[in-house]
Length: 285
Image (cartoon, one colour):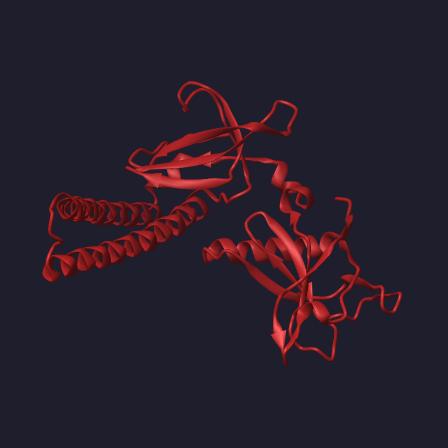
């Protein structure tokens, strides 16, 4: 049975306002004691599943069993309304002291690597899953998003060349450009800003789709440890902790810090590239 881990977490205010009184003036706990036992770990794992299934950045849930120490009362309080928040890589707690009804303090973050034992187990990459219908559908959607991104990018740089030419013409002439030329520059700037916003939205969509593909196809998430042997990734063995996933030109790239032979997270970054156009019936570990 896995041992529970007791953490003493520092506290900082959540800057909110209520009736013109800022949160730092509310009664603040001095620190928080949290026992990451089997029950809390199970809760965290269920929240991680929700986060990955819906490509969310953070999920939270009201819980019990967390202890807050208040210097004001010189007591430990276990009846404080408490919420656990889980992101891709961390967990932290928020709360409030009744009669207030709005969360106004939070703890420091705890890395999931430290509290989830299964996070230190290497997971497999089954390339055969790329042939599954849902994997192909997500890959096709990623390709369509990239095509649209490149189309918008080409138009953006074409407009940028026109804008620069007009701006240079204005600098090279003795007389200033007329109002219609100035209006043209303004319209160009507005159109370029609009295109830039569209591409930022596409980049966010592609990031979400990449994580969705990683999770639904391979059962992998940010923070997982993966390992390949020398038979398929550029002829060499790679061990890393997934910190991010990127897509470009039909290739899914998993990047993160290496895992050393001692089973520790190293300092050098490594990448694993998966060609989505190819599949294999082999499972690599």
